[in-house]
Image (cartoon, one colour):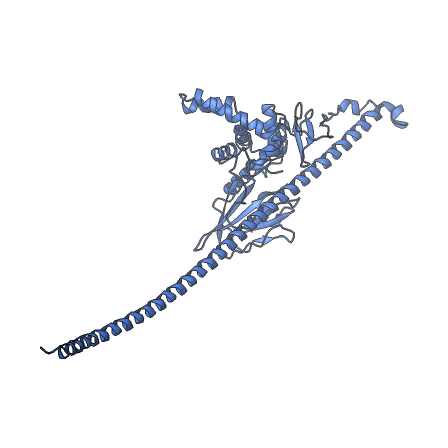
Length: 442
């Protein structure tokens, strides 16, 4: 199942294979492709970049116009191929045609059809920094969020949480835990808190060291988070691209690189989500109850001499010797077991993919709800603001009306005062005269 190294190598393959190529014409989509139609009406160039378990394809127009972005998830079997348009591979669900003659096609190939694409440049919300290309941000994101409930789970399950370990999948978690001999069902917080304490001690000891010496020490004694970066880098930085789509021997090279995942002699056990985890030694205290780990058997290498006994004329005329039957029967039985194991692994991978898709859908639902809540909140705030403005306007009108009434009252009072003063004077003069006329005679 493609994980961050595969996505990174796919991006590198596209950039190298499509450098200088001009694409044009309609972008073809198969009837069963899990993504929308891609509108494009002019010549364009193609480039790619990856982040965790996603790859962004950018179609840059050669003339005027904005670039068009598509974000891909590879599911269980997604990959890209550049091939002649006349000889398209099976399960090519999205095809970008070149303008040359005869044309070639950059195809998104996905036999299992769990892969998908969507229009837009944005990465899937809820995914943390990439373990491969954003190591420092990834490390800080994990260590500052150790109180999150995701770290209440076993370390093997926490490693598949894309919110904190974006890009880590089933084979990478097995390889990382195996190299540090950490039981897969040890509590995640216990493992990572110990790592936080170690980091603080290391900083005190190494404060005087140069950067090159610090890097050397990190390579010699890596911790779990460092291995989340360096193990994928081993796949990416291999002299021979372990997952080059044009190389038929790439899977054999990749299989020989694995130290734990699907390796004979290693134990495997289903975690609480039904995904198979590979490990060596004890599973750990949080292992699912009632489930016992079983070991992968080594495949029997057939001895050609044992399978081709000497046949004389006498034995060739009659029935074959009884001694020749057991190796054939053993070979058939071993082949049958291999097929059963392979089918079981495929079912587990499908289950893993379905679980991941469910998680993605739930995350998208949560994001949609957040957006809806924000919209509703803005609408409520807008209504409240408008209401307050209306109330303010009404209050101002009322105050103006009250001011006018008070002004009229004052003018009336002033008029009354203005009229009463001369009357008072006249009355005073009249009373004075009366007083003089009424004075007694001497």
